[in-house]
Image 1 (cartoon, protein in one colour):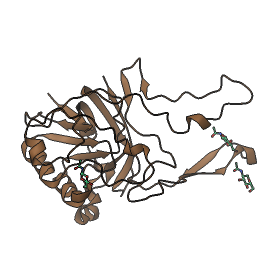
Image 2 (tube, protein in one colour):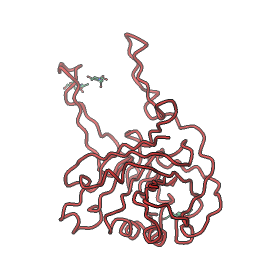
Image 3 (cartoon, rainbow, N blue to C red):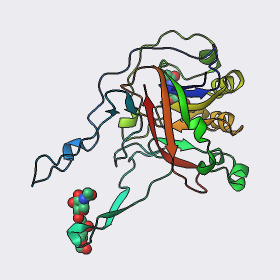
Image 4 (spheres, protein in one colour):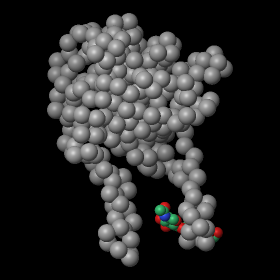
Length: 267
Ligand SMILES: *[C@@H]1O[C@H](CO)[C@@H](O)[C@H](O)[C@H]1NC(C)=O
Ligand SMILES: *[C@@H]1O[C@H](CO)[C@@H](O)[C@H](O)[C@H]1NC(C)=O
Ligand SMILES: *[C@@H]1O[C@H](CO)[C@@H](O)[C@H](O)[C@H]1NC(C)=O
């Protein structure tokens, strides 16, 4: 059976190996209020014109695991967050026939995918950009696992049955300041996953699957073979661990080493 797991970890694989860090525990409480909801413009003309923003669709079967883009969402290595990323050069209030915005966003912002060319210059020159990523890997059966937040993923945690960890709610994606203390893969943990499983998609709930201390080594281990796809900055809080169908679609940005990505889990 093909499987994708999510760390809260999302992994996709041809075969799910028994030595995976499968630790299940109860997810966090409810979602924080979605960004912008309190400022959502209700129309002055008609109270019914209030946009509905959802995290879950389809009678509780479809979970949106992408974060909303917002000026206060964290940006890699920044204390200031993403900041303004949308402008409205053509606005109806200023006489245009339609509102037409422009956007400027680093490709590795929010929920996003890494292409092999992100960390290997010869892959960049050869053109292994986000347009070359396999949608067959980004879409398919998936396993969402909840791993303990009290240690980074090393060969030890990846190799042994880890005890069910008390989930420490870090919620770092809701904090504007970049935080290096997030939990991710150390190099040996990444190597263990590559060597011992057929997992092809690894997703994680902060901006990097690699722990900050092993940032480049872990990314290298995952991306060198050009078979494993990394999805980072997923919104996995509020979703029960278990088996789902994952659907992730990056933009077809020619030449880009990363792309914002919309991901959903279907029960
Ligand atoms: C259209 O632009 C106006 C500003 O001119 C803004 O107030 C309004 O929210 C925009 N509508 C949409 C749908 O973005
Ligand atoms: C409309 O144009 C004015 C003057 O150029 C500008 O200051 C204002 O920001 C514009 N408003 C919108 C909503 O684009
Ligand atoms: C995980 O590693 C980061 C640095 O990469 C460190 O700051 C953090 O404290 C580690 N987390 C734990 C729980 O050991």
